[in-house]
Image (cartoon, rainbow, N blue to C red; front, side, top):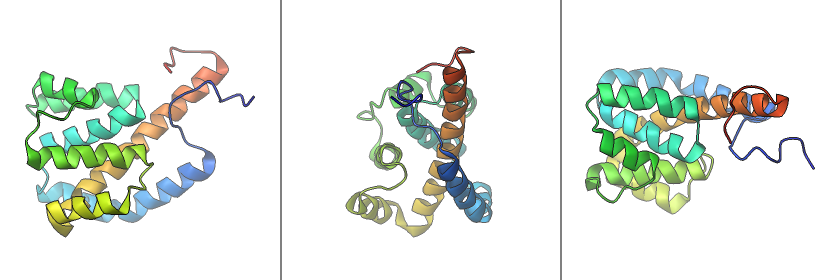
Length: 162
């Protein structure tokens, strides 16, 4: 039995960390431009990041982005729905992206090509790229936080939650 088998959250291996870090750095100029453009409101970006976080289960990101979402005016009930993966009450223009963000996270950033095509057709090339930048950024944070918790869990210290 591997010493990591009991830890149930997704976390980084050294190779995956370096791959994702390289991907993040490669897309950083596009992410900056996207964030500055305002094409995705901060409130919607927080919702997208919480949808990814709900799948990956990073307690640090969930806490941090809940606070940011509240500051951006996202109602607490919506935050709870996103973190519980209950997206039925959201308007279509948000629900499509939130559902895709969940799928994207569940597949480790390798979504079904048909799902990705539909997502891109719905939002268009620029906005879908903008949304994907937010997904990439939070996935990196989620897995980094979970990796820290995996290390704490393995060492038997801290309150690392599974």
